[in-house]
Length: 294
Image (cartoon, rainbow, N blue to C red; front, side, top):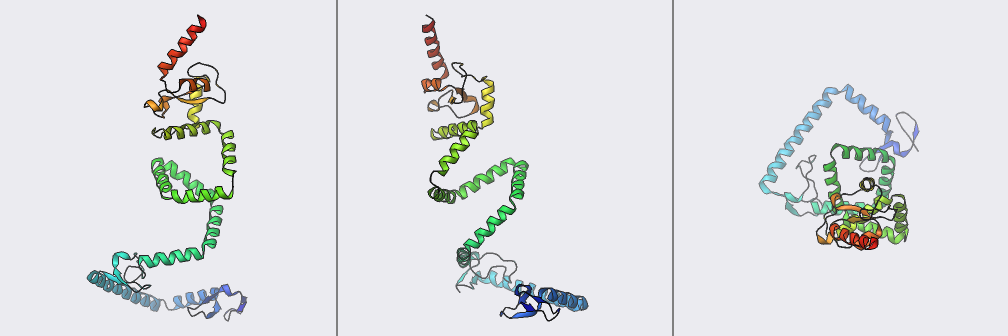
């Protein structure tokens, strides 16, 4: 605790400014700001004159620096001391040259070292930030999707490609630390969302067989079930929970995983049909029905 010489109040060290040399200023921050504001109000003309003189000198420095850079095309890095082309420096409008003092390589090294040194603190900060602003971030995402769905889809795809390797590594580390947890989560989700799980598995199987990727959601399955009146597409038996998503024209014969080529069938019909077309399979069913009645 320190005593401010202006207000004579005892305050913690965080309430005081410090000079570059590390020496503490004897007035607290509140009193310092009040004193500066009072001085600027009493000497307004002098303050404005000094400010204009400073801005003019900075503009002149920018002009001279730009003239020198255009003539040489190089700049000396303040970190490594090497003379490098101006293209190897990031832009910085606040500097006299319009470029950062350190080259890109040195700047990246410095940032990497800082991130490694403060990794735990940054992780804690971002976790706290996301937790505090969870509702606001979800609202922003929803607004982006509603404003321009196609743009949001492209952004998510680009982000997925950019972070794919990092996400895979993180997922592998998590699975190694929590063995069996992923399987339990998938089983619990599949039990709660059977239609969505069936649609997902059918889409993955079609993708493995070279079919074009088409969005196919649980709502589409429910609509298809209503169209078929809960019956198998081929034998018209009542479908239970173990129905199969069947491709009318098999993927192996050029069919696609798309709404017009999909129907719901009982497991027996789907397994028996195999790679036949609907016409070929219906002929077999009709022949069997004729033999039964004959």
